[in-house]
Length: 258
Image (cartoon, rainbow, N blue to C red; front, top):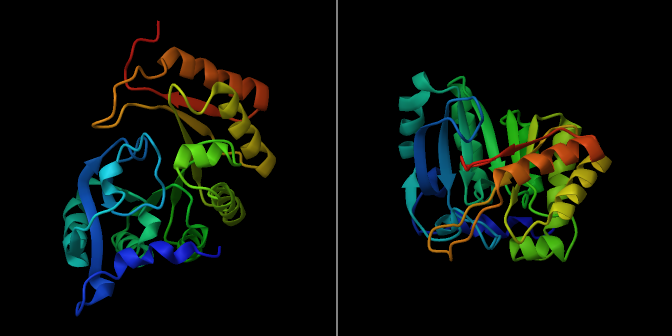
């Protein structure tokens, strides 16, 4: 889409260096079992994100610089590879650094590991390139609101994001890459009706992948609030399955459902 490469400047910082070997790194978790359910993964967090979601859990990775040579990331992945079966690229928004994403995914493939991408859907062209290069085994796509403004702009702090997200969904469908759609529910957004609308949009696109409804939590430094109870999320998932006909499940953080 026009204007999509505007985050590439994150890769262009620093003079007189081999930019192809540098990554604006947010951190690495050598072993995680929560980013790809049921799978042991190494998670690489890349800095930079074009969105300004009000409850962003990784808000400290939306900007800033902590450049590392790609060799640092490669060594971490190699060291963890006997104990994991995949690498998950997260952020921030990992596709904001397309060169780094391509190189890290390529290394994972060389080591016989699967690759997952956690993305906000802002860079459909980058996603398409990675999928067509057979560097992605699973996409975890955040759909934050019904796919239209003003709802999506309210959820992301930026207008005209919804068409990009829709294109990412269409890419995953057309190229038959496994997909998990995630919607995080906070007390004030999206509303229960809006979650139903998200399900309808997925159905209309022909998406048969399950919708994961997640319990939103206060981010660090944010005014505390009571998360939506797990029972309400469970009931919402059941309603989506019954009324819209797509699979839905919920995830909470251990609060009492009774």
